[in-house]
Image 1 (cartoon, one colour):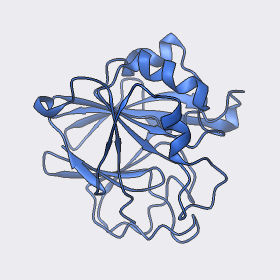
Image 2 (cartoon, rainbow, N blue to C red; image 1 turned 60 degrees about the horizontal axis):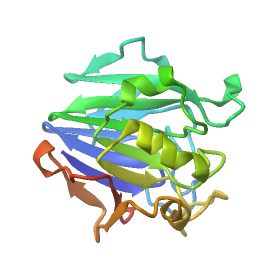
Image 3 (cartoon, one colour; image 1 turned 120 degrees about the horizontal axis):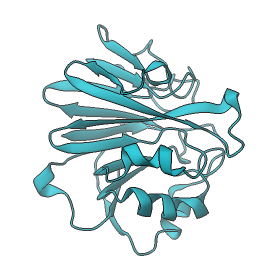
Length: 220
């Protein structure tokens, strides 16, 4: 499996010959990130926010779209992969208008959980489907997404081997969010692997023995 970070919350997951893009932003309206003008087989959006998370207009067609808010219980199979969603909220108040999702799927004997705009600790019911996920992609910019004091306990509960930060302040985003260092300060015992690239490859055999934070350069 190959994981590439475009910027903000947008990723490319390459697995089994498929190209899966997660939460594409709209350029240049999201700030300075350049357009995601690449082909995809599947585009997954964790919730509807055309500027920052669900813009389909700059990706090269054709592709299938998975709208996670509309997934049925038990998920749906798209191109031989079962995509499932956990319904959560962007803010601790859990207002209906703040509903978002965690998206997760299995491929190549790996379980990947994309936490999207999650903004609160998880109940046991919400946590159960992603407990033990091998890779977690997590917002690292603080409120309105999950606040820094709540992240260590969340990661301990999920117990991933790889954590990939996203959704944090860079010169190319126009949101009032925090830089990556705030996340790292709260996880002093975690190993940090700063990858001088925008992508890495991983397999069951190459997973680190202990939880490791993989810091990527943005591709756009």
